[in-house]
Image (cartoon, rainbow, N blue to C red; front, side):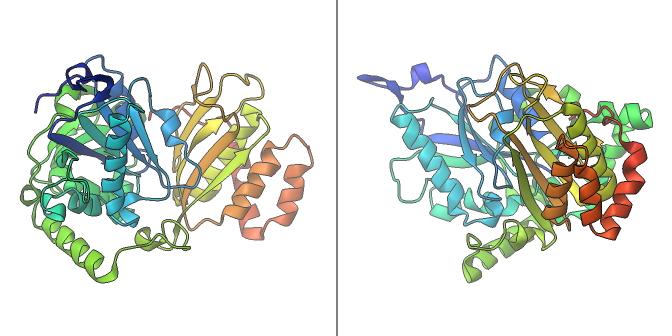
Length: 409
């Protein structure tokens, strides 16, 4: 499908309002926590040839930060941060598309002829693939809005982190399903893996991924051609294998019988991702010492290990208050912080989001206060208060209180 510029799609008599094409492709961008989705999306949106693209960002957490990491410019951004879209009623994605179209037609946002849905790292593609199938509404249009264009699933792009990917596949079923549903698999962090472990056999890795998905194109991130990665193409569920067909049928049956409605008072993430998976946040009004923050992160990583699935956020620096830091960590891997030239929004607080497996938020928040607090007695007071097991882990980590080593996203 040829992508038209908004200038060619304006309604007569109202040059600020877009006249939508009849069909709009929707792409799912998936990949487990820390695989580099926002990084790839930024690179795509910064391509001079990219235009007329709306982005839906789905976050797993109560404090949204991912939208701060994506270039805005003329891109229409829709933020969905009430938990995974896969854990809510699948009409949410259709309602989001309807809201995007209404805003663009009213001239409130830029027009678009393509939509990219950046899924949560814990997201299961099955509910969204079902929701975007023509059978869901009979025509592929947003239900209840006969004037809406037809939104159709035009591709599933999944990122595979070569450093942490094997562990993710072994420990998290969502990671396996993300690979299985993809028609494009982009292998990320191959440069980091080479630095850590020496030259990688990309052919061997491709064979291992091919065992999980026999039909997807497998591409090294360094060789990605954006012109084809998010270009419309036929996405046929039958091409993805019997497992995918079975998962979609099971998902449809579960949604029909149980309503698949988890938008209740239950903690986010428990409905689909297991009782141990949880997300929590830390927000600080006071600018932080960067050295003390890195000390906190090193302590937390060394004590929590693989149970610390993801840390991401924006840091208000005491030394450079007008230039915040973007921080990322995946289990034991920490990316180099990125210093922004200015704040991306009016909120200048430190905002951190943690996604963990079996970790109580309270000790983490107390450790943050103890280490980042400028009072010299705060850490001592924390150690006295904390339980023996947690203290033992912290004390064994003291020798590692150096700044995190370099990792690429």
